[in-house]
Image (tube, rainbow, N blue to C red; front, side):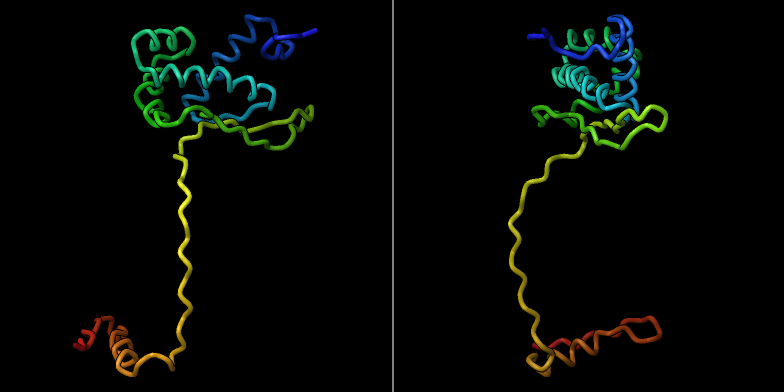
Length: 164
């Protein structure tokens, strides 16, 4: 029984699995989206969330922990300087996995995993639109002003008549 055993083995040894996820996290943070299988993407989320949380902390110890896991210094700099400030107000859920069908060779389920960089939008109440008034209901003075403000064929705009 697998009680309280976290993570997927993915038919790999521990060292191979850890090396694979280190490479995948490095690639995901560098390119901000990668294409992989669904089980790998689900497991990759754990490591990516951890690295982004370290980036949000931003202290020296967090930077050293990230450098111990991520393969490239340039990616760590990008994580701490560019990506972490974008996620500062987000409490979690830094990645999105979008399913993308099945692989042709072995029918493995594939997905696109990407960083969620857009800010959550606040819902705004829509104001009801005013019903359009028919042209006959408008006053004759307004009809003349709108007709004069139309641009002539020469391309120069004629000054609109000002009514007080």
